[in-house]
Image 1 (tube, rainbow, N blue to C red):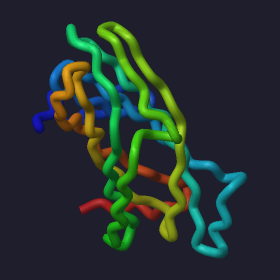
Image 2 (cartoon, rainbow, N blue to C red):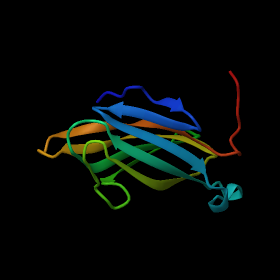
Image 3 (cartoon, helix red, strand yellow):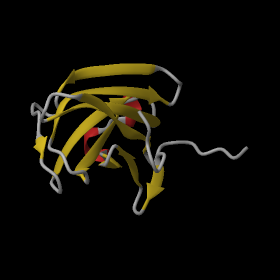
Length: 143
C-alpha cells in the first residue's frame, strides 16, 4: 500500500492521499453541541470523499481505522463498508459520507485504510490519510 501524496494537508484543514488512482480526502470538524468537555467527551465529525481516478470499477468492501487520543491510547475499528454501505465507484465517480468519533481528550489523530475490490475480484488496500481531530479546548505547546 502506497500513498501519494503522503497525508498532505490541503485547503481548509482537509487531508488527501492517493493509492492506485483512488483519491481519499478527509475534512474533520469539532462538534461543540455534542461535546461535554467538563465530562471529558469531545465529539468530532469527518467527511470523506472517495474519488475513482482510475480506469477500473471498484467496490469499497471494508474499513480499518486507528483512533489515537491525546494521551496516546489507540482504538482499532474494523468493519464492512462505510456507514452501512459498500459503494461501487465506476471510473470518474465519487462517493462522499460523513461519520463521527468521540474522544476522551480535546485532540487526537485518525488514520486508516479501505479494503477495495476490482470488478474482477482483485483485492487491494487504499490509504486513508492521517488527520488531526482538534477542538478549541486542545492545549498547544511549542517545542
